Length: 280
Image (cartoon, rainbow, N blue to C red; front, side, top):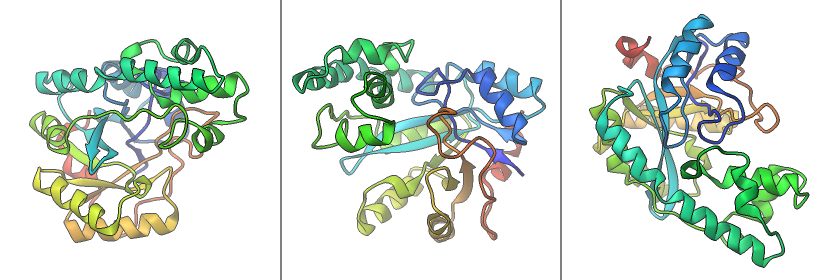
């Protein structure tokens, strides 16, 4: 099945509306789709309606920011009840620190000669609760401080560079429980992106499984073929289902388009098989 279960709209840090994403996904042959905005489920009803209008099956989705071993880890939730109050309250609390963090990021950028970054980043997002590094990166490209977003993250907004402000997100336990208590499945997003030692990564997967996590992204926009093979092995080692998602944000920024991923490696349980009764 051509399933794409990880992408972002203007509701968080993407550049397309849920409706535009649905049309693009369907045009690229996606059969099963999920919109997974960061720490937000406000676009779910629109996305589900747009999926139906474009002939696709749909799973509810979100991507929750978690702090684990001092690093930010992303947990994708799929197939949960979008009206579950525990999820809604948890995500509201998780978003709460973004505005203050953004203002501190802007102050650091001003100190190195880039004024107006908060207001500039805000132009790319409608809700200050959801302002993120991605929005600052777009502003820095706009004003010519960098030629593209990869250069931004080499020079700014990362640890040890101007504009980097850490934020403490939800706990791994909380994120997994919000998803599972709402009837969904928790998935570790793009595991190759985290800068963990082998022991730290083992601890992440072990704790995730202990809290009720059931899936891992094996094929995703930022994974190489070798990394997909590696995390196929991790999925088997921990008894996790495999997910697949482009992590698409924008036609101008994303390396992998919606629906254009390679298939899952053989011998894995696709996460959507565990969510058959949640697909709409």
